[in-house]
Length: 247
Image 1 (tube, rainbow, N blue to C red):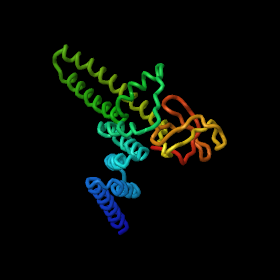
Image 2 (cartoon, rainbow, N blue to C red):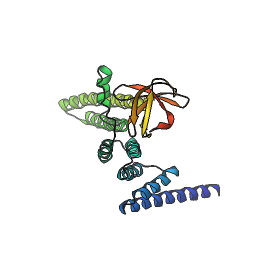
Image 3 (cartoon, rainbow, N blue to C red):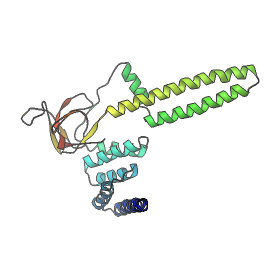
Image 4 (cartoon, rainbow, N blue to C red):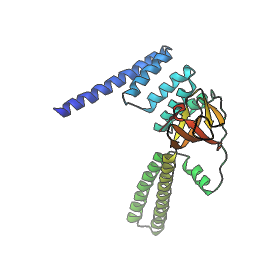
C-alpha cells in the first residue's frame, strides 16, 4: 500500500511540474515574461530540473533584462547539457549585458596543454568515446581471430593496440576533466554592485568592485564570506549573500 501511495505521489508531482512548465511556456509565448519566470521557478521549487527548464527560465529573465538570473540559469542549463550550442550562444548574448569585462589571463605550461585538450568536450563525452573505442577493439579482435590472410591479421593486430591506446587516452581525459570540473566552484554575482574586499571583514578596503552577472570562482569560505577569483587572476573576499554558486 505504501508503495502505491509513493508511486501516486511521484506521478502527481511529475504531472504538476509538467503543467507548471507548460504554463510557463504559454505565458512566455504571450509575452508575459515575469509570469513565465514565476511559473518556471515554481517548478524548480518542487525539486524538478532539466536543461530545458533552466534554458527557458533564462530566456524569460533575459527578456526582462535581469542580467544575473539570466546568466545564472543559462550556466545551470549548460551544466546539465554542456554540448548544447543554442544555450551557449544565448549565454554569450546575456553576457554582453554585463558591466564588468574580465579578460582571462593566458596560462602556460604542460598542465595548460592537457586542460586545453581535455576541455574540448565534456567528460561524459570522453567516456562515450572510451566505450566506442572498446567496441572497435572488440571488432578488431574478431577480425584478427577469424582472418585467414596473414597481412590482414597483422593489420587487425596493430589496430587492436591502437584502439587500446585510444581507450587509455579517452579514459585519462575523462578522469582529468571530471576531477578539474569537481574542483571548480563557479558562482554568479547577484548583487547589483558588490565590493570585493582584501580581507573577510566589512571594514576592509575594497580590492575591486564587481557588478551583477559576473562569473567568479569560489576558493574558500569563512563565516559569511567567500574568497573568490576572477578569470584574470584577481582575488578577494565577497559577502556570501552577493553571489549564488552554480553547483
